[in-house]
Length: 64
Image (cartoon, rainbow, N blue to C red; front, side, top):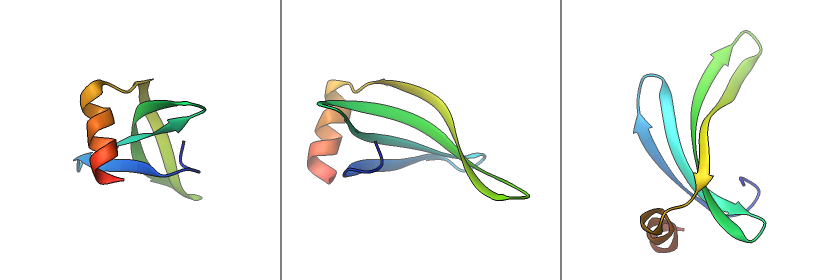
């Protein structure tokens, strides 16, 4: 998903959480992930993944 263009929106600050909309094969998907850190560095933690809604597709098309 992150190897192709995607749309990203910050959802909340604690923990640092984001919504990303991007391509998986030939369909747009949405994912919520958190940015965490440990002794070895930054970690992306997957919270949820689903097929993008019409609204998320519209946001992707307008912003990416």
